[in-house]
Image 1: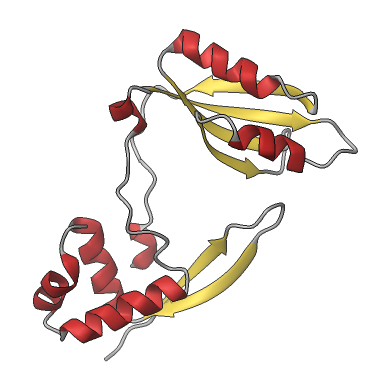
Image 2 (image 1 turned 45 degrees about the horizontal axis):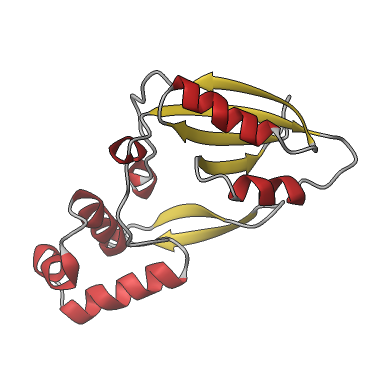
Length: 172
């Protein structure tokens, strides 16, 4: 019996979100779990572990990449390991009646800004930022706030991350 899993993948797009539903079967799910557990497994190792042909694994990987389920095979770099142990979240309010594209371009030029999300609620943009220490965080906040279209910001410092970013539970 083949069990199907349904994933909703949000395609990155400026100023809007596009959702598409992707259905994966048990083999795709097992392959994704294997890659999550052992990113170095490789196609041959995955084929041996899953008991399927190497070509089957390669074909499944190609399809998962083409459908946007797998975004990257790049290593996950820990900012703390690069000397940026302080993580914070900033909510920005953008001046009304303006387009936030200029602000996004400004934020892309700040290396310590790891993510930017347009949001609902009291703010317009949510950022995940890193810094070398609290004093350096002030420098990063000043850079962010330095854009004339940023009306206000509020920042909270992350004390710990008991549940890091994860997608594995979505696979089933």
